Length: 571
Image (cartoon, rainbow, N blue to C red; front, top):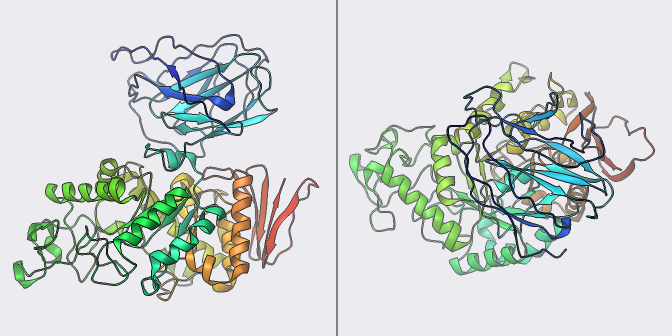
């Protein structure tokens, strides 16, 4: 689809800071065919309030409301629920708008759809700091019953005839746009043994297949010089010659990924750093002779340095970095910007994120502006004397707290869902519905920040610290690839388990994309019995796992994919 290069510009008049109820005066609104719109917002102003969007004579239909077909004019007011309310916290992704009288109430983000007619329609575009109402006058052709999802969008936005999409992955500069879109599918592009196999060259050969399979971001192993071949004992952060390959090969790989529109995710290992020379107490807690030549003040006092106590859990055996030191954070931000702007990484994965305060992750994200971030907040699930506890609210609450600590800028791996799912597939599928009728992991509470997965280089691979049952792998992928959240596929399952696993996973990804399942998609759990779990995701996908018998009753459903103990239907 051709995109119009000349942007429409909506000029918003300034508002009075003393006015707490109405923030904007009239705006200039333009009309343009939906398939050639480039929207730019000028004079952006912060609003720290709950929002109410009001229309007059509005024409729309949605989950809760029905209005007359005519649409003559509109007015836009932004109010607070109570005078002086300064609430800026994001509410649950699953909160629906709450109509009240002639006003539509919503919070950020607001997962709500309008069914647009082919005659006269309008869009409500949600931006982080204000709202835009875009009016399409009569005569503008739209597809019949096009379903537009309302969600937070970046300042520069292109429209398509299917939904409000994002600009090219490699051109987007808004650090929140990827999370707001919710259409990510991640690929962990290594395992624990990858350093033995000329890895950058190996991945270079696989980039076309990774892209064609539908992955949007590939998580690479730590690329910097390390005392351990796997990369998790870093020393010289600015050296990109590692056991995975040379700096030249890495940059060639990143360039190829960019050409194929797959973002590169850097593994950010900044909880600890191996010293080069002995310092205080005879420990290797100095970094002489290499870039970032820190002294003992950069190392926490609880791991042999002269810095402050750690703001998180200790990673034993190596010097832990003291992130409370201003000079340390300044140097780390400089290094992250180098990875982002010079080397070519676009996304970040924060290793051992429990080791330092989440507020520093927020500072690093704001400083380096990765397009997408995910943290490894891995601690033990809740167990009782009989095994995994049926209530994992405490576990997922700890992950929620960490995400909140990052200013909600980062996502987190959904270790709760992994722990529950790998027990559930062993004849305990009742575990997959919590007492509120929702999924039991982070996915059930905050799906837009939940990065789901089955295994990684620690839990699976040759380490196998907490492996997903091997004979239930495809059940697991049938679950996470059809459900809300941000799914991740592990290298071993995709490339080392044979063509059958590869092709089944690709088919599930294709269903997810074609049916537009995203991180905030609605879910209705139909069955959660010991040997059967079934659910409807959105309005066009049904699935089941387990050896119990189940299928959707309506004839308009067709079988889209099936395999060992799983099936997926679509409309």
